[in-house]
Structure formats: C-alpha cells, structure tokens
Amino acid sequence: MFPSPPSELISPSSQPQELSGLPPDIEPEEERSWFYYLAEISYRRMMNRAVVILRRNGENDWIRDIASTLKRSDDLDEQIKEWCSHIPPQINLDNWEVSNNELACYVRNRMLSSREWIRRPLVYYLVHQPPDDPFATRVNYHHRHHGTWFAARNSATRALILLSAARSGNARMPQQWKEAVNIARKFLQYWSGEAPDLQRAASVLEIIAEEIGMELAVD
Image (tube, rainbow, N blue to C red):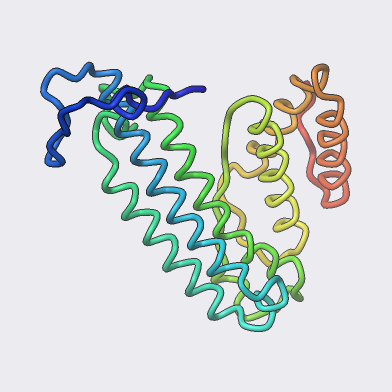
C-alpha cells in the first residue's frame, strides 16, 4: 500500500508521544507521510458530509430548489478552501520546495476532484433546464485530473461534464475548455490499448463534440 501509514501506527512505541508535535528525529519522508495520513482523514470526513448534504434528497431536489443547492455547493466550497489552508507546507504544492513531491500532488488532486464533485448538481441542473433559465449564469463548476486507471475514467467524466454544459447552451464555458476535452480524448486513446472501454469513452466524446459543432484536434 502506498503511502504507508507512519511507522508509529504499525509499531507503536511503549512510551506515548506528546500530541503537541512530531518526534524531533522523524525523517522528512515519514513526516510527509504523517501529514498526508492526517490530511486524508480530514478530507474523507469533509467529503462524507458533502455526500450527505448534496445527495440527501436526490437529483429531483437539485431541480426543485436550485437556489438552496447553489448555496450548499458554495458552503462546501468554502469548507474545501479551509481544508486546503490547513495543509502543511511539507505536502502543499503551493510550496515550490515540494512541487515535485508525489504526496503533494495527491493532495492537490483531492482538492480539484472535490471542487468538481460538489458542482455536479449544478451541471445536472443546467443540462435539464431551458436556455433562458434565470439561474444559468450563476452556475459554475470545476474540472481537471491526472493519473492512470482511475484518472482515465475521471478524465472521461470531466470531459462529458464540459460537453454536457456546452450542449445545454446555458453555461458560460471556462477558457480553454475545448483544449481540456481534447486532452481527455487523447488521454483515453493513449490508454485504450490496455483498457478497451476507454476507446469507447473516447468515441462517445467525439460523437457529442460533433453534435455540438466542436472540431476536435487531429492527432
């Protein structure tokens, strides 16, 4: 399993450690592992609450009361920002000294994924409303993710979200969204030899793009 839990959790010392901080002789990599472990716990608690808040009454509630859904999404976004503000510099990509650290990248991807996830109800609303809906200009969302097996499917999901929003005619599309869809398609095609369903996902993106008049880049 990677990252491994801190060694103190595997082989606890007979002498309890002070809760005020980490042992002074702890190795830097293990220190980062500690911080990542704690960040993951707090992240999971936060997102468990988000799931309950946003999915308590299902998709129909998103349509029926978009004003409340928008407020809940904004409140959750503030919680995510607060979570990010407490990420220690050892695993924070805003700290240039750890910009190439894998755990810091994982934390950043958690932030991106969570902010995209809490906006999905708003995209769902856009897709199911007429172009003149008064809330259309207030709905926003986030996207982008990288990785391997799971990331390929996440990339397909995010590209479909963008295409769905563009197809609805209600969304003010972010800059370079077409480039993001192209990147996702190329990513899916690259890995399609190892997972054939990814080629199908890439084909679906191409079909929808053609339907809305979007010209995909030629490889």
